Amino acid sequence: MYIIPAIDILDGKVVRLREGDYNQKTEYDVSIAEMIETYRSNGTEFIHIIDLNGAKGDFSNQKALFEIISKTDMRVQYGGGIRTIQQVTDLLDAGVHRVIVGTQAITNPDFLAELSEEVGKKYDYANRIVIAIDVLDEVIKYSGWMESSPVKLMDYVDKCLQLGFFRFLCTDINKDGKLGGAAVDLYKKLLEHSPFIKLIASGGVSSMADIEELAKLDIRSVVVGKAIYESRITIEEIKEWNLKQMTSL
Image (cartoon, rainbow, N blue to C red; front, side, top):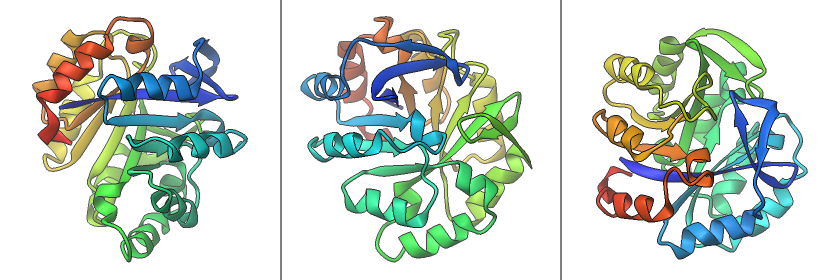
C-alpha cells in the first residue's frame, strides 16, 4: 500500500477541511509550488492534488495549478470540478497521471460510458481514471460534498465496474480532517462486496499506526494530508514506507 501525499487548494492556498466543510478550514503557510518541491526533493514520486474551488464550479485556481503541474516530473493524481470528457482528455494530454471524476459521474447516467469510449481511444482509461466516492454514513455526496445521491453505495460501485472502471478513491467524510483514524470498517465492506477493486483510502489518517492498520486490507494506496502538515507523519517515514511498497501502485 503506497502513501500518496495530498495537497488541497482553496483560493490559491494550501488548506485542509474538516468533514468537507469549507467553513472549517485550516490554512498552511506554504505555497503550492513549495509543497510539491518538498515532496519531490524527498523522493516522493506520486502526489494527490485537489482543487476545492473547482469542486464547486469555480475554476480560478486552474491556470496557476496547471502551470505548476506541468513543471514537475512527479506523477499527479488530480481532481476537482472535472465535468466534461474534454477536461479529462486535456488533463491526460497535459501529463496528469490520473484524473479523478466525481460529481458528473454520479449525476449524469451516460457520463462514464461516454468517458470509457472516448478516453479509451487513446488511453488505458481503467488505470488513468479514478472514480471518487465521497461517503457520509454510507450516503454518496457530491458537488463539494454539498449534495446527496439517492444511489446506494454498492450499486454505484457495481455500475462503475460494469463499465470497466475499477480504481476508486473513497473518502469517509465523517473521518476527513479529524485525525481520528481511517474508515477501516467502510473499506472492509467495499472490499468484501468487490474484492477486485483497486481502492484508494482517504480521510482520517493520523499516524503510521493508521497506515499499518490499513495495510492489513487489500488497499492499493492511501492519501494523507493533514497528518503530514501537522508533523504526525514525517516525509522521511513516507519515503521509507513507499520504498518498500512500490509494487502496490
